[in-house]
Length: 217
Length: 323
Image (tube, rainbow over the protein chains, first blue to last red):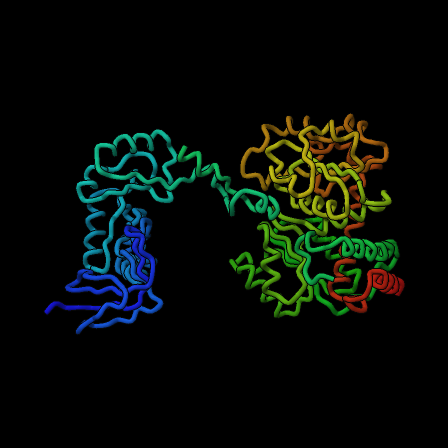
């Protein structure tokens, strides 16, 4: 007899099929066997889902799990727990840890700690440049072999167009994505809010839209 | 009357007229041998200055003293601020000591507004970062009113570092409110592109603006607020936007020359120009005391109540001034 659970009356959201409405979901042996109105549960365990959402697991492309190095802020275990509680089944861990995730050893350690926590998939992102310093490329191939698919210097936007171009060219040899946190540092200096009418009125230092667009240009 | 004075934009036209009319009554007090009236006896005014200041701090101090208030001067050096006390804790301490009004100058735009949410005392903005300096604008209006019958259609050229100037903001908002026409003049790097939305015109050609100006208001080049190089050299700035003797000749004969101080003589204003009779810079200072007396008096309810009409307020102030 398979183990059956009936999730009753949830708002079922599925972008792939375009479904968004109240329905029941029947799960047998950890697999969805039926979705529909008024499903009979039989001997299934029934969970009342009134007011709740059932959706494919969410993915957080930009999470700071802070470990190693900043465990006073967050650990991989606490971050994974928060992710799972919020419906996230995968989170991408940013590389601005200490040491920086700019080599395969740190990446492996992050994976190891994530496995120990065992609450959601943790996908470590690798740094584009060593120490997030924006100067020398990291060992992208080695990290790609260790399973890294996303490379970013996070909020340390790579300021040198030359280095960024090099990274984009080099990364073409691998199945990876280079991701830039588009902020021109010089235009961001001292910023407090968006540049515009209200910043002029309030005397606050504004950051212009060009601070982003010049980086992605 | 308003509880706090944080921005000129809190005031309507009637408020401004009432403040200036009341200041008129207090102007005379400063000419007496005994320069004091009992209007705020027993009230406590704290000057909380996080930034250096000569005229504004002293002006507020004299204003409060001439109204017989007790004045506490608090500067950040030699106080717990130097030990790292936060603005909030300092504010709550002053509150606990029974301050009725807190006059604050701060390098951060918006600090007075934040302070006003923490205390029951009236907060007066004595200049916050690159935001506003409302009492300066009011004393400027008072000074202009001594020379012109109306603000309506009055053409005011505000020249210089508008971007970093809290004086320029407050004056522009105030003049726009009173029906004047402000032209902001300076290099494009020192005038926010949004300035026309403040209700002002913008020009980069001082010589084109001067012949049509009733008031030529020179701003100080604020090198301490400029994080970057906004113009190539002081020499070039002075050549393009400095008020030289030759440029004064281009002004209409009745035009006033004003400056909020402190002046960089030889940069934005030539030394001999600053000393011309039509340069009413010291009048601005004198009038600042009367305007600040007026504000403290009106905001601390020194009159017979907040709901009275402006003429009654003014006559109440006259009564106090006669006492």
